[in-house]
Image (tube, rainbow, N blue to C red; front, side):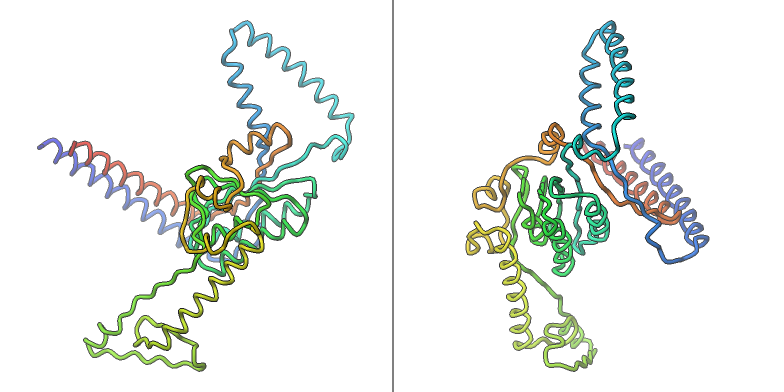
Length: 350
């Protein structure tokens, strides 16, 4: 027990010292960095050739299973093949449509409550629409529990740009696409889901804390002045009325009806009375209800497509300033230290 106490004190001092140093460094960097607007050229589109990555992985595994003599023989043959391939590439014309395989463009959307990832999504879609045609396919790996209506409405509209160009859109859900996430998913020509992914939640929810009674108890008045009968319906600090509550409910019902109409337009086979109750379902259940078309993980689907087409991953990366990089490093360091403390504490408890 004495050793555990001493070790805990030492660990606490070490963590405090590291946090203090990182805090000072991040503060200096934030002071030195000049605030300025971020132009578009501070980001870049990063493209990964996933087909080649899959092929390399396959070759590496097969090579490791060979004997040393077989590996040497394979290396010689590979050099010969690469030389012939370079010669063939020199003779062939760039962008030769006759020899070009079908292409699959992979995008990722990791949604938060504000759908902030739409800023990168719109750039990625704008880029791929410049080079893609109706023979291509776009695969969106979607993960989102939903959020604000206007944010996810914009994200869904960005995906609709792909459909309007006549390009096939496949949505892959490995973990969750609920509420606003499903609003995005239903845009796809096909929705693929992992068996235990969560989908659905076709509903609208809002909650507002009200401190009126607490303020009234302490003789604090809140004056709310509006122009327009329903400029404010429910408030956090004023006294809410039955009329305000009724109007607020009407607004929620309107948003829900728009949500249902949107899903119905894109998934004609759904029984909206059955699925638009605000409930969510696992992938297996969602398939039975028609919310998804097939049970399959994104990895399984992309590996399958890579045997038939060239698969590329597109991702927009924004350049981060020094202060931002130090801030992320500081956050990651604190998180790792916190987890280590928890692990050590649990170890002593066990």
